[in-house]
Length: 338
Image 1 (tube, rainbow, N blue to C red):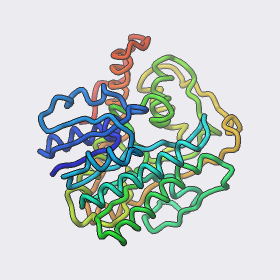
Image 2: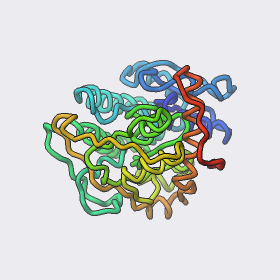
Image 3: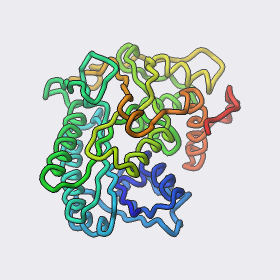
Image 4: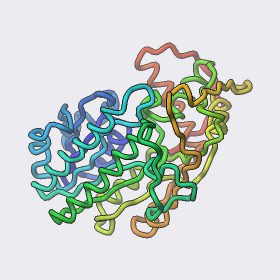
């Protein structure tokens, strides 16, 4: 197939592109490089079936041009939870970008597979979350909900386009992705920041008391789930949870990462939520993946510790490639995830 990927220079996009090229598909990658990196595409940038286009997902004319002749559009480009800025970019980029993607895909008869987020489940206390679970969002003055709301709008817009235009769509709610090519700031998730802190022998910053729980999914498992929704008609016009079902506290995640990198006791710094102004956290986030198992054959394969070992080695290598001062560490492991 011919597949267009928005956010192709980002974490999920670059790993997905590599997998699709390996499976013989043709890929057009679109990215404005605001959060993605050319370095992420180094392994396939000269592949005969790959073409990179630098541009913004809100550019409607560009979207129409690059989606022409595509069978599938995988929409991954987005702005995330605004911790240290206002919510405007998150709301407008995610809503306008999705509208432009769907409009272009509808005109060219392409299927759309789009990244939603597990954040849409919000404050729902009933875990694990199935695709039928209620979406419970907090107060409008708490800007962290802007990301979840933008993705809820995206999901509704996708089903509206399916109803009006008859196009096939798939919405994927990802849970805690990590691995090579992840963004090495909070944009990439807590594990990115924790790994850097452990490498630099600095205290790992935990929000609140660190007892909130998450499920972390190695990137190859996320990619396998996306590929299945691209290639399987059973996925059409459905919402899927894609993630690992292991639940772990953020504090325990920090301890595991520290002990993989260093031999002393973990250094922990508790950061009050008040640091972010008005803020509400999600205290538990665990997926029910029964639907993905039954319809897609999806099954996460990479254990958290094994995935973190590979990710730590990659992050050290990426820091060195970027010229970031990095101590010569004797890591506490030898194995790595496949």
